[in-house]
Amino acid sequence: MTTKRVIAILTAFIALTIYSCGTASKESAHYSTQEYAMSPAMEEEFQSDDKRSPDEQSLDKVETVERKIIKQGNIKFKTADLDKTQSLITQTVQELGGYISEDNIYTYSDRFEQVLTIRVPADKFDLLLKNISESAEKLESKSIDVLDVTEEFIDIEARIKTKKELQNRYIELLKRATTINEILNIEREIGSLQTEIESAEGRMRYLKSRIAFSTLTVRYYQEIPDESSFFSQLIEGVKSGWDGFLWFVVGLSYLWVFIFIAIGIIYLFRRRRRNRRRK
Image (cartoon, rainbow, N blue to C red):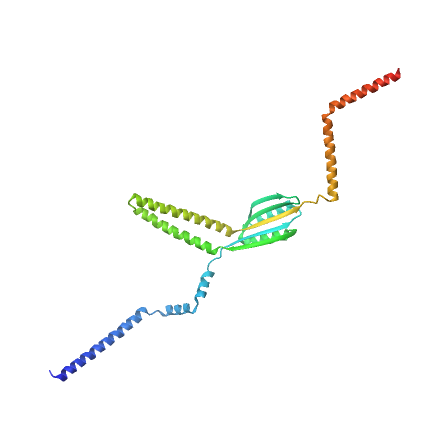
C-alpha cells in the first residue's frame, strides 16, 4: 500500500468521525430541547407570573385571608333614671341577639352607678353603640379598641394541625412497639402532645368567642340631690321632728305604770280637797 493511499484512508476516516460526532451532538441537543421545553400555555403562564413583582404576589395571598378582628369598647354617661336606662339597654341588647354577662351597682356619696358588660354579635356592635349613645342624657366618654388577631389565629391553627399529625405518627409507632420501654416512651410523647393540643384548642375557642361576639362595657350613673339645699334641710327637719315624736311616744309606753299611779294620786288629792270644802 502506497503512502498516498494510506493518507487518503486516514483523511476519510477522520472526516467520517467528525461528521458522526456533529450529528450526534445535534441529535442530543434536539432531544434536550424537546425534553425541557414548556408548552405554550405553561410558557405564557410562566411569563405572566414573572410580570408580577413578589410584593404583588404576596399581597394577593394576604388579601385572600379572612381577617380575625376582636372589637371592644367602653362608654360612660349620665342618666336621670337608672331603672329606665337599664330597661332600655336590656331591650336593645335582646333585639340585637346579645346578652348581659355582668351587672354591678355601686353607691357613692353623690351618685348611684351601674356597670353593664354586654356581649353582642360582632356585626351588631356599631348599632348597639349608636343606640345607647343616642339615648344618653349626657355622654361623658366613649372609646373603641380593635385588635387584629389574624396572625395568632393562623399560627395556632397551624400548630394544632402539626401536633395532631405528629400525634398520629406516634400512635402508628405505638402499634408496632415491641418492648415495654418503647411503649412507655411513646405513650409519654402522645400524652404531652395531647396536653399541648388541648391548650391550643382552648385558646382557639377563646379567640373564636371574642371574634364572634364583641364586648361593650356601659357605665352610667344617677346623681343624688345635694343635701345642703334649703328644701333638703327642711325635709330632713320634718323627718327628724317626726322621728323624735315617735321616740317620745315610745318612752311614754315604758312609763305607763308611773303615769297611772300619778293620775290616781292627783285624783285622790282633789277629791279629798273637795270633801273638806263641803264640810
